[in-house]
Every structure is written in C-alpha cells, then in structure tokens.
Image (tube, rainbow, N blue to C red):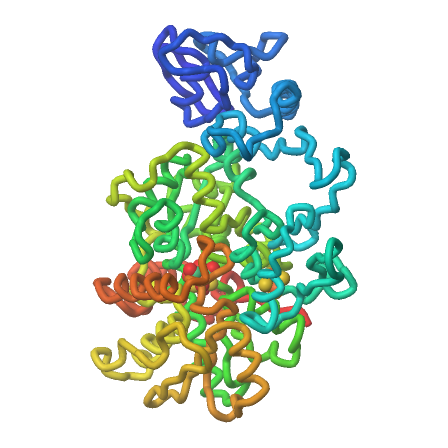
Length: 574
Ligand code: HC1
Ligand code: SF4
C-alpha cells in the first residue's frame, strides 16, 4: 500500500492506483471527459489535470499513478484556469446547438460547462441577431432572484403572479407593445433596488430561464468536490416531500431517507435536519409569546421564520417591526448552532474545531432564504442556500438515480432529531399549530386534547384562526396577499394574540424554490404528506425533543436566557 495526501486529506491506496482513483478514495472529485473506467486513459481532454508537489507541470490524474508520499492539489486557481481554457478550446470547435441535440441533458460536456458556469465561454446570441453584445443585460442585483430578459418569451406569467392574481406585490409589470413588449420593474430599476420580497413565485411560473433563483449549487459542488472543509447540510421540512416530483415520483411521496442518501453520495460529511431547529424555534418563540402575554406588550406576536414576510414588513410596514418575533428562523438557528455552539464542537475532533470552520449548506423550498442567510447579524452562519430545484439539479448532474436510492437514510445525531410539530412547519398554519401545542402544554393544558388544530390547516384563502383556552385567539395568513388584506380590513390588533404569516400560498410547501408547480391539487398532496409524517411521529410536540432539551441543559439554560438570546435571536432593520 502507499500513502498520499489529496487536498490535505490522507489516503491509503494500492500500488498501481491512478491519481484519479486515489482522489476518489479520499472523497475528492476531479472532473473528466475523455476518461472511461476500464478503458485505456487517453489524457486528451486535460480536465483532470492536478498539481503534484515536486513536479513542474500539472499532471493528468487519469494517466499518472500515485506514488508513496505524493502531495496532490486538485482545485488551485491555476488548475481552474487551465480547465476553463481547455473547455473554451473544446467549445470553440463544438456547435452551439444543444437545443436540437439528441443528447441534450445527457451530454457530459454540457454537464461540465453547466456545473462550472463556463457558459460565458460560449457566446450567447440573441434572437434575430448575430452579435452576442446585443444581449439585454442580466440583473443579478437581488441576492435571491436573477433576471435575464434576453431569455424572456413575453408570456406575462411573472407579472400575473407578482400582481393581482397571487402575491399582489406588483414589482414586475409589462411595458410597451408589440415587438418591444417586455417585463419591467417600476422605473426599470434593478430588482435589488425594488420592494421585491424575494418570494420567488415568479421563478415558479417562468417557463424559461428569464427568472431563476440566484444559483448557489455550483459553489456547493466545488466545495464538496475539493473536500477541504467539513461539510454540513440541513434539510427543510417541505423539501423532503416535493423533491420527489423532480424525479418522477408521485406528488406527496415522502423521500426523507432517499434524500439523505443522495446528500451523502454528493459528499456531505454531516446530514442534519432543519426540523431540529424548528423544534428549538418553538421553544424560543413560544416562550417569547408567553412573556409578551404576561407583560401585556407587543401583541399580537407575528411569526418571523418566513423571510419573504420579514422582507415585506421591513420594506412596507416598518411600524410592525416591534411585533415580529425576534426568534431566528430554523435555518439560521441551525447554522448558528452548527458553527458557533459548544454543542456542535462536541460532535467530533474534525467538527467546528477552530481550525477549519464547517461549510454549512441548507436545502430550502424558498428563494428568500438566500436573502436571509446574507442578513446583517446573521451572515456567515449558513454559507450557501440551495432551493429544492437546485439540489435536484446537483443530483442529476452527478448521475445519482434518486428514485432507485434506498429509503433507509438517517439524519446524523444530535442535530437531526425532531418531532411531528417541526415537520408541519412546512405547511401554512403549521408553525402556529406547533407553537400552540407547546404553549398549551406550558400553560398546563391536557396534552391529549391540544394536539391537532384543524381550523389552522389547509390551503385556503383568508385568515384561519383558533381560540386556545387560557392563551387567546391565534391566526394564520396563507400567503402575503392574505396578510395584506388582514392588515387593511381586520381588527387584528384586538382580535389576535399571535399571527403566523407565510408569504407563499400553502406555506413553504408552495415556496418559490420548489418544483415548478402551482397546481392546487399538487399543493394539497404535499400538505397531506406533511401532516401524515406528523401523525405517525412518536413525539409530536417540540418540548418533547430530547436533543433540544439536551442543548438547553448543556449550554443555553432555558428558553430566552441570555445565552439563547445571543445565539438564537435577531433584530430587524427599518
Ligand atoms: Fe420553511 Fe422553516 S418551515 S421557513 O417554510 O421555519 O423555507 O420547509 O425550512 O427556516 O423549519 C422554508 C420549509 C423552513 C425555516 C423550518
Ligand atoms: Fe414579485 Fe416575488 Fe418575483 Fe419579487 S420574487 S418579483 S415579489 S413574485
């Protein structure tokens, strides 16, 4: 056997092993095009070039054998430039006709260009022109949504969904007629300068690539491929269900185990559950509600885990900011714990050990979660946010047969433990129902009577409400338009003690990062699956989460303690 190091990872392999296979054994991925396992290595595409300490020029990893003591680097700046230049050389001789190519979607060159965002090396030419410089400029000013008007087919769906028909934000409208008709913002401002709340509903309906989520999956693949940092992923409650649709499984199929196995195959070192932090959110937010009720101030409490809603309040109604819960969303709590708590450090010597900060990725049904991860005071806790669609793209790009994966995947412990209450966060009304379960318990109610609150459930219009004995009446706004209407027309200040708002219709299960469907029937199936997971859960209230209790016992004391406020709460900008 021989020992070598690849990107700082020590690995032992047999004599006669290629550098490519040695890297694979170390968990490092090197791109290839002309290499095929079992056939002679030709080393012509030059994609697999690596640097070996002591040799002057980069070496093709498919062809060169590993030697004892080799120190190999696979992803230096110089190597990335080489690869990009080699791709450009290949593309210069390759017709730009993917659209009519029989292997469109299955082409290795196309996959490599797409994974690495090398498209710019392949001139894009707008319709009716032969000049690439005539392309309308792209708009990357929003942290969540990218626009490329050169791809727009003027269908008008984005303006419909952002306007009266669904979100009632009116950020995108149509200007001009005939040949010049195009979607615009007010005064043609970049999206990042408008009052766009980043809900991403426009990206759900765009039939082409004119409106997409700001992609993070390329960075995530690179980080996983190089294997330099301990990588951590957390998965949102709604994603584990809707991702099934991306791979042809029936809407409402629960794919938790398959998804965990796919994330491990992609190379994540730790696969955790956002649901753990959803239980923690309930402990913090429920205690915050009880404290406000006792003090008689800042009521009703508005939930704060939906970043589209938080954006809306900051941009349109800053007077409501004092009513927002200061509790961070589960995504941000999970990131803060994974990066900054002693609890995480106890997971193992390679984890948050102060030498290499973990690379924390979240998978969310939401585009606005990208905004949230970049908020002042929170940025850095979650490095990259993938939508459900982006994760599906990554899985496809790496040829993982999702539908054929075993369903036995388990989250890593302890940041993977959760209750049914956390799972229902993914549906409109779920956050409030989860909070009611724990708050009722804390107020001494009979647990058997207070578990299910049907009147808070469902993908229907208007305000849903329930009166909780000993607490008060709580409300749920299903979608940002419902919240706007409630704020204008209802006596919400006097009627309700707490109000949940989710910016997308149906809640996160209808989020802007989900598989592209707004079909109410599909949303119903996703919701039914979410409540089905809760109904079968052995523990259904957040206060029963043993790992959350352990976190309080070992580090935070109790909900809303100074340590909890420091790690798990935030503030808002007017
Ligand atoms: Fe949601 Fe949430 S429920 S916001 O809808 O509070 O995105 O699924 O992950 O953070 O848990 C989204 C979903 C999600 C957070 C939780
Ligand atoms: Fe409108 Fe939401 Fe799209 Fe922004 S993200 S333009 S608010 S639909």
